[in-house]
Image (spheres, rainbow, N blue to C red):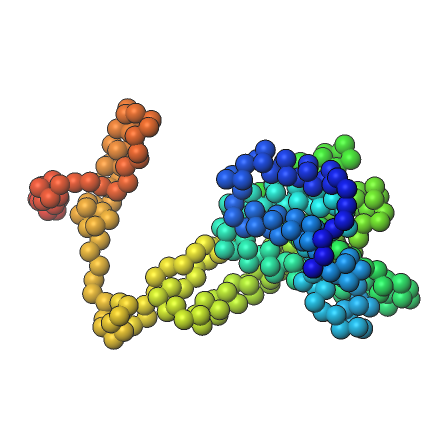
Length: 317
């Protein structure tokens, strides 16, 4: 590992000021960790850029597959780092809160690897179909491919609205394509194939099989890690957490059948209509009380109130 011998990194200082302006406590943990890792590798890169950038020649022909892991987390200069990490900051805040930290971390790890693989395939295809071997030597580095994939996810989970691209309003669902072209026109030295690879990976997740494959792999991993009391559950937003699961009864009693649950602990013995009425009363009561009072959850009835409620309901059946 070597440290960068540079003067004042204005882009890095601006990035740090942006992070502290948002507030470290306001940044979800996985997003904050991704920022920290990229900043750390910028200050102390594992290898020089020419030894960490990604190309068909170095990976496929010279078998340096570790570049797939190194290239997303290394940046050419401080401004390259700044623009990528500011984009990561805002995308990460919204997506991590939407998807959950565990699933978002899984997405970052998967996208970091897959964008590199798709990039190699694109460069190889261009070299073969256009008869230009120079594409195989084109070396790319940086987190922008992952960011384009996250932008596809952001447009998917937060649809509607417009984005400003070169002063023109563009519907957000086409924003990533417009930015792909705009960035290439403004900065021809950027990796068009790397950005396109990110968009394709994002589309594989939102409209292709990638999300299902990730869910299946996550399920297989969680059932083989030695924790039989939990299994992952998913919703349409991705990974949502763990829920208790004991296929042979309670933990510690593997062959004991589980008895019926006492749902009175959750409903206080009320019918659905009575629960609704109580909820409305509690809501009206909360509005009339202090805003600083803690919210009331559930139904706090005394045993005598529960007994009278049940008798009243049975008398009317």
